[in-house]
Length: 242
Image (cartoon, rainbow, N blue to C red):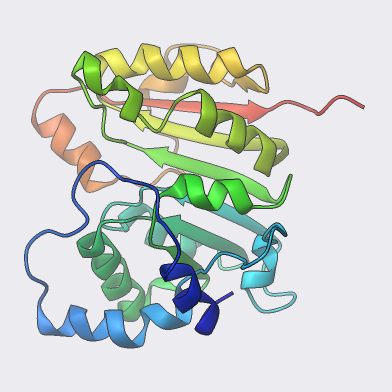
C-alpha cells in the first residue's frame, strides 16, 4: 500500500492532531531522504473498507511477526529494535516530520530496512489494521497533556486501548513508558479497565527497571537528567474468548 496508494491516502481527510507537525527547518540531506527514502517505506491506507494486513507491507516470508510503535519520536528505539530483530517487520507511527526525517537518517546509516512508516495519527492506522495482526506494540513517553482540560488528548484512552486490544494477537505485549506521575496511574487505570490486558508486573522492579531488550530513548535520558523517574509498563493481551 505504497506509492500511488499513499498519494491517494494523503488526499483524504485527516484526524485533527494536537501538537506540532513540523519543527526547525530540516538540513538538506534529510529533506532529500523525505523525497527519496520515505516513499519506499510510507504506508497508505486501503482505499476501500477492507482491513490492512501488516505482513503484506513486507516481502513475502521476510518477517515472522510485525510490531508497532506509536509515536516513535526521533526513532532511536525503533531503529535499535529493527537492528536487533531483522526477522521482525516494524511499523512506526509519527506525524512530526522532523522525527520522521531523523528516523530516515538512522535507517540510511544502517538501521535496517524492515521498517515501514505511517506519517499521521496512529488511530487512523489502528482503525484499519486487521484483527490479531500485531505481535507487540509500544507507546513510549507519549505527551502527558498535564492540564486537566487536555486529558482528552492523551493517546492512552479507552478508544485507542480498545483498538490495540483488537489488533494485538493473543499473548502479545503492549509496552508503555512514561515519566509523568499523574499519567502513570492514568495508564494503569485505562489499560486494565479495558479487560483485554493483564499487567505483567510481579514486583516493583518490573516497572521501575527498563528491561534489557527495551532500548533507551532520548526522552528517557532527558527525564532522568531532570530528576524524573520513568516507569516501564508491560501488559499482555489476554486470550480471546472461544
